[in-house]
Figure 1 (cartoon, rainbow, N blue to C red):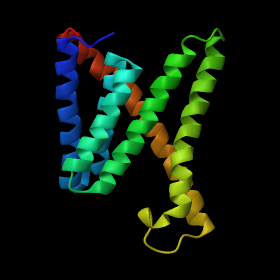
Figure 2 (cartoon, one colour):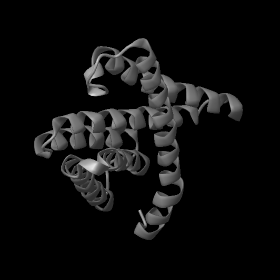
Figure 3 (cartoon, rainbow, N blue to C red):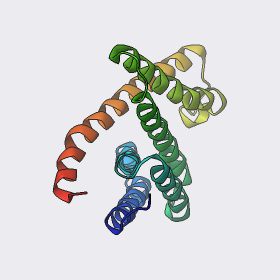
Length: 178
């Protein structure tokens, strides 16, 4: 299935907005995580509007373009991690929709997959690159605290993404007639 011109132009504008949000995340230091989360939400929009294959292509294109244009490359890596989490989340949601399990079991598998995906990315960074989180020496108490803060951040990010897709993007999508 090929993309029609309307979807292609929509994805192009969405890519421009995504890269602009990543660049603004590097320029406006006080809103970095908010802007990077917004940019990663665009990856989720692309996946839901054009499918997994084209959405993943959008994700790769947004990473490459951000690396070329954004002044702070560390923020591009953060955006890539947030976007990867959403790619895996949307992929899991798509695959679980075809499984004949009851709803409770599907929800539990979906939550577990999201939890494992986040921690596969977060724990190695926390253990091997602790200077990204704290400039001093990390003891076991601080390590446990950063682990818990990461889990809370995951919960907030995931709830914000769900709210954005259901309510904000739902209203905007209806006006775009995609």
